[in-house]
Length: 266
Image (cartoon, rainbow, N blue to C red; front, side):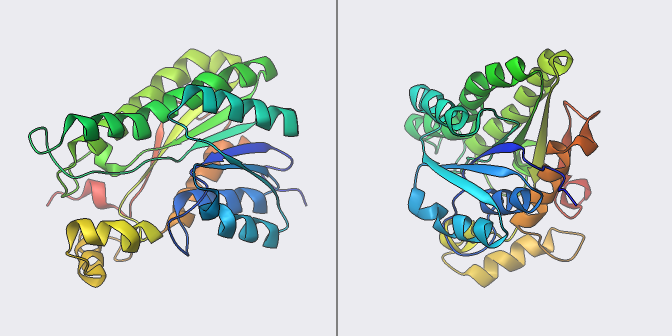
């Protein structure tokens, strides 16, 4: 039986991970491969993609890696060209690159603000800029952008750059979705909440809990009505639906993956 993305060509940016486990990009690459997609795995650090490659191959999938800084337009253009030269087309684009920085307008330096805009929002703009003409020529394609619940509500951390840019990703997706809907291209957003990904141990615990991982996990879990934290596989399953033909009439919208956190009143 063929998979839901059988023989589709999927670019996944941020396909590496900062440690072992299920980050959003790694999980998406593996989940898509399990459903028959051929993966063009993109990251600026190819060492971080090694486990992704192993897991995709273990699932019987086809994967090619490509090093790229998705905040650089020329690099993104070269990445898209390389994918088309290797596979002949691009059916799915998953924009998964991002990162947070602490601080409000006073505490945050202009340099950090600019970096937040580049990595979280400009990266999505640039990949769309260079992939959309390919999809338009094919008269088909699906773009899935990964935002954050920080883009739709205050989640307990003062990170104005991250919140503003992730909100921007959501609105960018809506505008592009309407512009390209009649051309056979769908654009949607997955909005993950506070997941337990390798990023928690590698970076967030140092930023927010003095290095105490268990304390940070307890703080995050307390906000989630479902009573447990998901991981990158939950993001990947939402992205899979949006990328597949099951979502053929779904564009310009969002799936929130947060265990009910954003609808709590307290």
